Length: 208
Image (tube, rainbow, N blue to C red; front, side, top):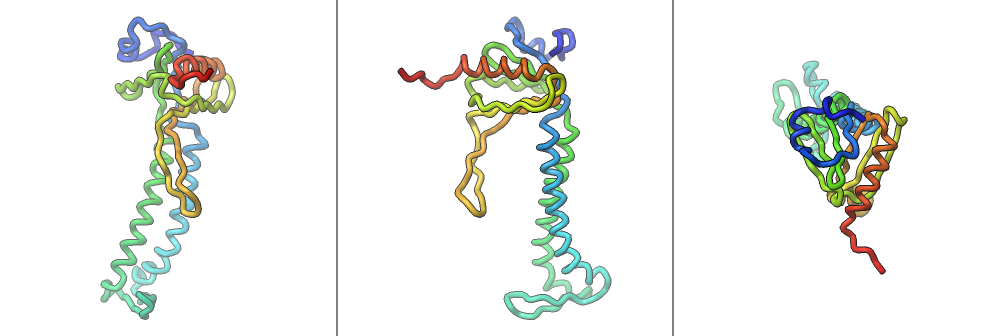
């Protein structure tokens, strides 16, 4: 954990006179395995899409014809007659852009800094790029995941908010929003503070 004099002035001003459980600097915006998952998936997506790029567009770049079926009708496209290939090329282009987007976002998140986090009895405050986000502890579900070592670890805090994600071969799945504190020191001490404050501020009525 870090001392007050090391915190950005804007964060210190926002915290004011509130008592502070912890203040820590995160080296990354999210765990490496999460970013690498996006990088690998994006690369695999591009590798699969490249098969169609080579099959459909490769011959055209080499000045040859492309033979394919369009609505079960044999179709020929050539450098002098690109009209039949325009629609398939657009579809392939969209898939290429999706792969590039996933790969680019994964690489970006891999090197993106995580900013500063400060915990008080009532809220978790995140400072990054002169922007402050304050989240009351009651907004967290209590789902906490800790990984790494005490002096270089990660904490994932699940929120009560989230979104439904459709699945191709199954029912829709609810995915909660997550706050990551990645590459932080004193990870287990901070996890204990977070768990304690979330429990103290739990808005769920206690059953008799």
